[in-house]
Amino acid sequence: MAVNCIPSGACDVSSFANDEIDTSKLGDPMTRIRVSIADKGHQMIAISMNHSLVDAGSISLFMAAWSRQYQLCREMGGAEAKMHEDVGRSIITFDHPMFDMDGKRNDEQASVPDEWTRLLPNESSGENPFVENKANMTNEMTDVSCTIYYRSRDQIEVLKNKSLAETHRQRQLQLEEQREIRTPPYVSSNDALLGEVCEQLEATSVLLCMDWRPVLDRTTFFGYAVLFLYLDFPSASNVAVACRNILGWKGANGEGGCASTVRDANFVMWKMQNETKQGPTDLIWNSWTGLFNLHDQDYCNDNHRGDNFAEMECCPHDMLMSEQMCRARVDVARRGLSYAIVFPQPNRSVRVYFFGPSEVGRLLHH
Image (cartoon, rainbow, N blue to C red; front, top):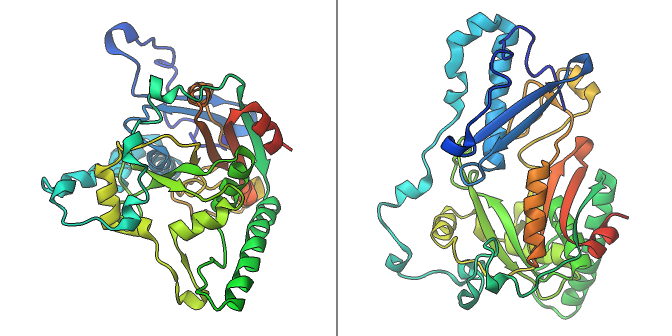
């Protein structure tokens, strides 16, 4: 739900709003957009884009470009704004980094660091978990569901503190035994949320969705920019800390810490060439919280603008997953692969969609 994202009089869509698309000849559209007008200027914007072409980051860029066009419509009027139709194009690029490889492949590399290969599964079990085949039906589940639950900012802090409590105990033992301290002083909100799900699911392996745009300095790339990092944990009891150790952290005052392999541009380019090597795992974890930022109405009325990836002039109140996307993720869960995606909410709270065993969903929805 958003407020006044399309100014009245900016355009007239009534003449083609009900056009039928002959999918028998053209196939399903790559993109569908529907805007439903509610009372008090509220609008519901439904966006459907082919996932093989774009990801959540691209939707964020699309909404940012739309917002800039809206700003022109509001300030100049519909007719004058049409003279600035390139406003959205100026913030969008389409050059995929794979075109920069110049024919280089993995077999041309002299050596690959061990910390890189650890983020790939065992190649002997290299079945793509998204593909429906016999190898991926061995853990077929029948009692699966889509569970939607919320975590407030305070609840997330509780999860963080719970994860760090065990870390502090381990740090004290290391100090007493005069061993090197390799425990992180903090975990992120995403670490804590992931740890909560893994503990309930008893998951010790995760495919973590990663947006490579910031690493390669291509934040305006419009397309599919997702890598799947294979994370393997010794146990499901404290995944948050184990995840932070893998992803890297900084010590006090920026000194020391643990280097982050996944923030290495060379690693990202290498991982792109190995993206098809995915093995069986317990959970796919995805988060959109870094791509969108939702504000309270009072915050929007004060004309504040967020520092999120898609800086939007109009003010979104909420984000929801479509029924079609939910059904597709339930089908993945039935093959024994649980899936979770985190959506942003106002005040740094989140809404989590969990697709997996119904019993685990009930435990999360407490």
